[in-house]
Image 1 (cartoon, rainbow, N blue to C red):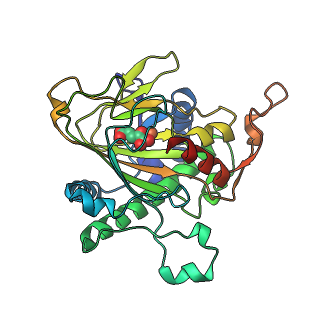
Image 2: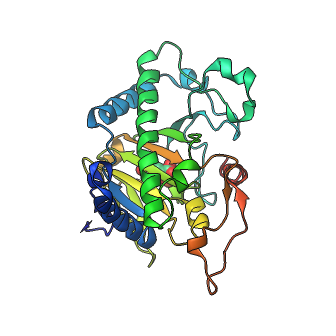
Amino acid sequence: MTKTLVDIPIIDFEPFLSGDAEARQAVARQIYHACHEIGFMYLNPGIPATLINNLFAQTKLFFDLPFDVKNKLAWVDKFSNRGYVGVERERLNPDKPGDLKEAFNVGKEVNPEEISKQDKSSLIMNQWPVGEDKFRQTVLEFYQACAEAADKICQAFAIALELPESFFADKHEEQNYTLRLLHYPPLEQVVKPGQVRAGEHSDYGSFTLLFQDEVGGLEVRTADGEWIAAPYIPGTVVVNTGDLMQQWTNHEFCSTKHRVMVPSDDRVKRSRYSVAFFCHPNNDAEIACIESCQGENRPPLYPPISAGDYLLSRLQATY
Ligand SMILES: O=C(O)CCC(=O)C(=O)O
Ligand SMILES: [Fe+2]
């Protein structure tokens, strides 16, 4: 395992994707240490660079659309958690002013015909800008590539914790994921005291894949309370474990605070784009302390909860 200057490990995931059982074990061991020690790592989970580049190009075009067009797709409720969120609408740190960012959330795309047939609470429609077919197509292709990567990462987490390989993948099979495009606009005005691009927070779900551009600003808080930079590293994706994974594993895997700061130099005048793929278990998955993460002197720290109830309670606090 290579340590970066900032102590966030860079792990070569290739042997997990194409190697034998031994090679997969070796990768899983590195992932265990990253999740246990800092909850952040850089991975190459096999998402093609051209797809990532296309997605960033489409993200820029989307945020360049007039506000009125974007606002027609406005995020309406935490049950769907989809659509457009304007600048300062969201506070990832509720004690601070609104975040200096705009966002667009997409969930699993469903066929409208399926809606009437099934319980509609789990089948919620995405909102798309009219006439932007290339955008929709690229975003959905990217969503699928991330979902496939997430499936492999689930397997690696299970092996890392000596669980059956499909333990986490089975509980994520509904693809209850949120793909979030983010734009941090250039800042000309003086920001409010304490205002940042994204407030200090930990992610709610099981884990997140985070794609960023080279503008930077992402910072991660280490166990001793120091903020360290998590810069863009070409060919890698930042992967971090979230609160629900921390709860599930009785803190064997940690969920680490992170934030996006306003640059103190000229980069403040540039837009920053990033894309987060938030992985969350199936709504009805029961999140109860994993057997191998508890013991006589290590009782479960949390009572069991359904993943769906947990997510709703967290979204409630953010908006
Ligand atoms: O934009 C980034 O780099 C981080 C965003 C983030 O942490 C989040 O949306 O949860
Ligand atoms: Fe985050």
